[in-house]
Length: 572
Image 1: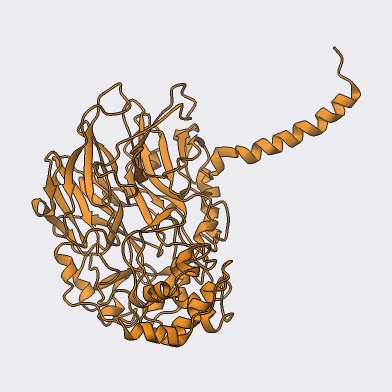
Image 2: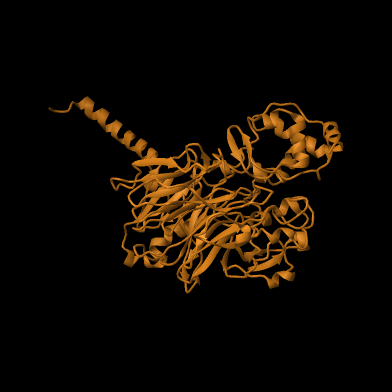
């Protein structure tokens, strides 16, 4: 039947519009920028509990550790039955025996036929059975963090296994730089730092023994502040970590550091961890711009002095500060181009505390290796997660890369912690003719504001703009709660639309004066960040900043008076 001219005209307009809509809904490579020859597909668009680390069986079954465990489970399992890259089966299982509603989970590893995973305090495992999605046996407890203090900052429990039956687990430092009181401007660090006895290091355990606690392990290395990204490199038979560096150089020592220095320093250290190594936390940090380890200000440093730091181990590479390395995987397959063989893929979750400069990171990087050490500079492997540039506040980012896993067919999986999206990446190019030309476009991405070194003047987002309570907020609060007050998912709560801010003034004042540690629920979401005490602020400063918070960010609550702060301070 012939098509009428009117229908042809309608078809002429509708098809291009529908094509544009389709491009918005299903962007190329799931919105990612990848080197030439790589392709990505979205395995699953979102998982409510959000996905942390992942592992893939030889059968191609993908297991993801959910950040939030509830009565539905703590693990998600996904299966692609028709080989189109997308999950056809999505099920959840593995609720912890305590049936915790929330947790700060981290690890997901397959070792010796078992699926290992962790909450913030416990490492569990299930026996895997070929041909089944959900393990049929009981959940077993491998290791329990039995310290009386319970949860604290840097509590994550990633896992690595060597080739001799050992399991490696970090016990993160319960502070930023061993100050007492913690995170207090100008306060010295405890010397020697007593936290190093049971924290700030990596312990080695028997991978096949159940019911262990820290005392059953061997202290393998020390001076390591916070670990989420860790892997065993089978090529040189060594443990590697990309460490989270310390925070708050400007807030704690404004007489020494500028906002620009605080945004870039200290380095996120890529370290080769050998038995007995010590990387100097809390006494030292690595400055990637000077390419040396320097004395921390809590121990008399000024950003230049080396002092005792000459006696500690250096990293093999230093990344810019606050990029938040959250996974490390060494690739040992054969189907990707040769340059990736035995190299390190690193998921940089992205900064939260680079204010007053744009946030940075939010990409998956790659470091080529040869003979057990980096053979070149870091590269951008996958970018575009945030969806915006510049990233002014954390919640501007649509996605944040979290976990990396490789399947037996060398397919690469990347998880996101904001919505629980998972991508599958495959190589479809010519691996024998892959090199600098195919990487050229990715190298250009280093010029974007979320990857380049910020200009000290031009990229300062708040230079000279604020006074009074607003200035106090941007000096002491915005690095965590962000410039727009929206916070950072899972770590720092928002300041808008919550009774914690607009409700009981006495409770709010006491939180500022005394601080708060441990999990708290705000607007239905649990946050695990630490609110340090700010009693060093005067009564007037506390009143000014709380009045600013209660009358901004969409809030419309009454002012806080200095007399109210003074009265509560006197009762502490």
